[in-house]
Length: 240
View 1 (cartoon, one colour):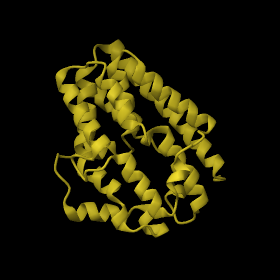
View 2 (tube, helix red, strand yellow):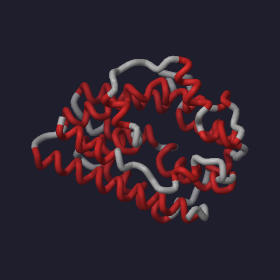
View 3 (cartoon, one colour):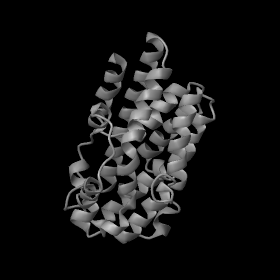
View 4 (spheres, helix red, strand yellow):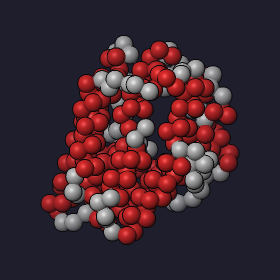
């Protein structure tokens, strides 16, 4: 329990100072294009591939099952809408008025490249626990993890899911139709289970105190690189 609390305390800090601007009404489409291009090329497009690397490290069977379910949903949408999450992301971008071509050849900003290289390094490492902590806890998680993980497990109602869609910044501030927000719906349908799975596999797989500290250090480094990455995006967008 103490180890899980240390993981959650790191996720409590996954909160960048510029997010109120990016999720608010005063950001324009040109700035959003930069933001979403970097998100897509840094991790959205290849998230299932990076997860599959962890599966390929041959962790215990229970962990492989959790990873396989996550990969299946990310790559096919088989647990939600039958469409991969990267494809749902691009459909959401089209509804925003951006072109698919805008996402085909994205040049990563320097700090984004450093962050992506770190994800590559962690998922290529032998220690599957650190890799799972990096991808399944940090990258897939958010500042809301504590609420998602500690709250009693239950499926969200259709009304709760649609409320989340209508409160999304792209719908509220940028005129994106709720019909184009199936990525948000997919996240609402499966995310609670995936959050619990992420913490379960890491806490069950970690060894003694030294291994725990290595995992914590890995997540601290990931958080630091992510914050720098988001700083770089803010600068590129002229957000101060």
